[in-house]
Length: 147
Image (cartoon, rainbow, N blue to C red; front, top):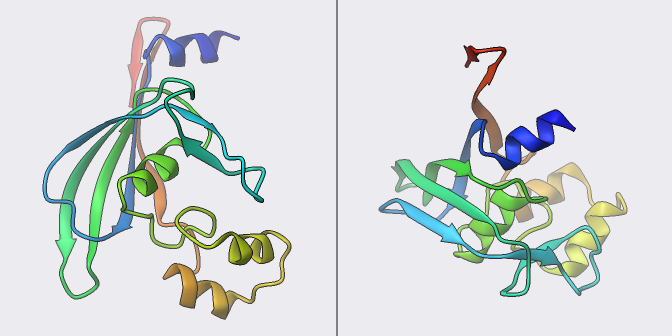
């Protein structure tokens, strides 16, 4: 597929914004392989030296001291499943509202099986939804640059 080939060639620039737990003070380059988790949750991924090569750049944009949250820009250079979520969790900065990463598997299992109320989700994850959002996309097609 042409689009997949272009992504693998890094012909696209994708940037995301996310709110994460804790204070990230400086830019971080995460180079950690990603593979399927061997736990209860089969859709969950994890970092592993035997996983597929994965690279994400994290740039802190602002810090909210009261909430102890950092707004980050995440730039994945590879396209692994749940890559930004896995990489942020792997450095101890779970994305706010994430119902899968950085939480007890019993809660995650109940969430995935729709046995958790919206109120319980907010209490445990910190938000009603995942606070990870596509922010920027750039690519060239037929010699025209699109952003």
